Length: 410
Image (cartoon, rainbow, N blue to C red; front, side, top):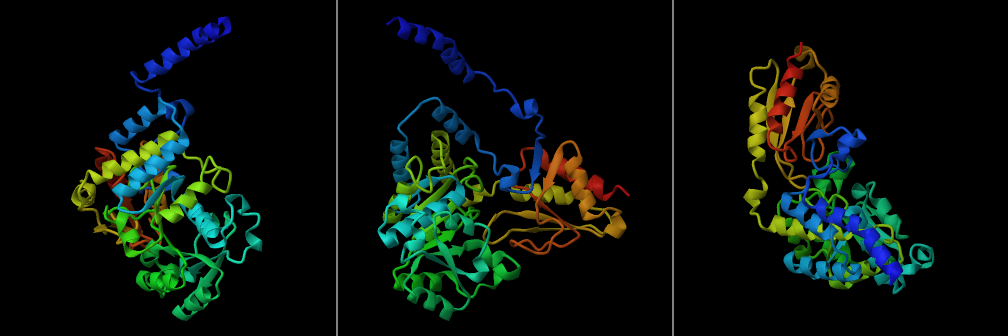
């Protein structure tokens, strides 16, 4: 009794401090650590810490942080809730879209080989089925998320290639990179569309996964691809959904999402290190509730007004023209293109980017700035690309002022 009382008394100040911390503003640890805050005129890129969460989601995360629960209970009930809201059979909150791809692959390997989660990836090379079929044009860095589970990739180009790969009998899953057709270069050369891709795979009993990581908005995409027949769909949580950056969604057939759950943390297996904390699970659910409380028009917010304001501030600058474009698939929101002639402005694209980045406040432009057309954005060497959807109130005017100053420096 004495030791219990002592423990209780010693914990009292900590408990009091924790309770009090919910009533006061938190310390600015960016400032404390010397980390420079930026104006995000780029978009929801991981390297720029993705999206900022809406107040409702921040509050849900705060409340969740104060109470322990049983993780399995939270995972299962959040999955059931999300599946109902997103019109699919099953759902799992994952550690981002990349984590979702690994869990999808593990689930399909397990489904095809009737194996135990602990068999992956060590015993995958002894399994009859371990191939993920992918169009050559859809190969990308996230292939490694599939390799983690022990899968290997079979490349196809033509429909005949695809049918032969499916006929081989060793396919466990197909992977379709949803935004590829908006890409320039090899990614835009894929010959097989979604409907034909689904039809051939399903004729052979092979589940189809689609990577739709950055493909919301529109809101309807959250159920469009499962409705088309894709067995598994991955979304990033920290992009257009505006949830925690280290969360994502795996949606689809419950038979497969249940297997993904078996491979997920805290269970032993390939997903053990892909931990999603209680705060992120609740934050993901709250973010979906936030998204579904909006119309498609509301989700676009005042993005066009922000682009128009910045474009208006470019008027009268010699050689400068502006254009607003909205990519069709990934990052389906207005982006402002500012084109100029360096010989007239006296500043190159790189000099402008460096000036904005090193200024106060520091501003990051979209990474397509100064590059060839890509991701549905027709940029070139002398184009600044401004992503307006992650700007905070008033930042559009600051961005416009700083860009105008750079373009008129000469």
